[in-house]
Amino acid sequence: MGRLDGKIALITGGARGQGASEAELFAAEGATVIITDVLNEIGEVTAERLGTAVTYRELDVTQLHAWDKVVESVFADHGRIDILVNNAGIFQLADVFSTSEDDWHTMLSINQTGVFFGMKVVGARMRDQGSGSIVNISSIAGLRGTAMAFAYGATKWAVRGMTKSVAQQLAPNNVRVNSVHPGIIETPMLDEFGDALPTVKERIPMGRTAAASEVGELVLFLASDEASYCSGQEFIVDGAMTA
Image (cartoon, rainbow, N blue to C red):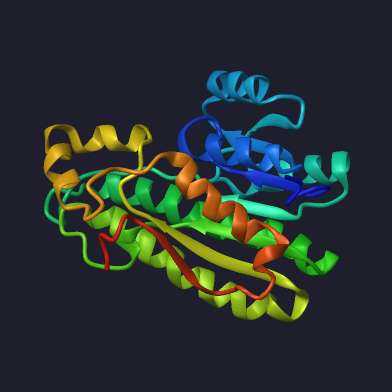
């Protein structure tokens, strides 16, 4: 216990699923955690359930001014941000021909632009304070082709590349930036697979999906000082799907 003692963490998409699991793990390890989302009622309930170390703030990750506002408020309350987890994201099953223009722009704005804004706003603060860890949640769809999730895969490849670029830029400032690439995880995103889910599960060599906490444990490691020399890298948690 205490792997994150005294650290201030900001987690996007933290109202439920993987983000909420990460918040719970971080708080248990001593962090003060700010979860953000656009699901305000669910976010408030989650923060209350997780205890006094966790608070909720509304944040639409696609809006730069919203990032500025939230980060300003966190600095006003705590004076720093030590950990940023860019976890907010959406998933859609659609190939290149069935992806509409609106779906494309929505996917990019949340999954890619949201990560860009987070690294831009929080990364600048971390640069100035001379420390920090940014963990960007990508996917195994950012490691290989995903014909049936075209726009989603495009954004997750982008997150992988942006991670490496910012890791190089911020390394001299003692700010680490890494990406995490989950496989099939038990979160509300699985609903998108519908009747195809059993077939997807059959392709997992370990023969099961993962709990959100199994991703969270990896994110916790990268957020902690234990990962002090890890930056610009992909960390995979997928039950050997991409082996």
